[in-house]
Length: 156
Image (tube, rainbow, N blue to C red):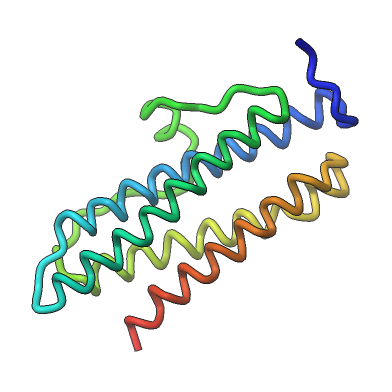
């Protein structure tokens, strides 16, 4: 059935394509945060284990909402590792299992996602006439800003 929400197909496709890249980034960041949760070592293990858990739980909710937004626009959300690796802006690195190493890498990824989101807020409204998605990703950006702040606070 045709999606008829007042946004032309071409614009819904463009927004969904950008959201698919965001979903891939969210999935990679989620996986990296799970890795930190599972593999962190050191005298701060327990606190960091719980901290990373709270972060990946937030990312799980974000991934679901991004995928659902793509579906609301009438497109299918990417849902394979192959697709995510092709779409993502993020990369994986081999690092030590100390909390500060994980925090630095996760912080950089959050900041990258924040910049990607920030760069799409106005185009979604102005170019693609999708104020709803623009508003939606503004909220996501604020969530990532808070998560980045929580990570950054460990580096002081």
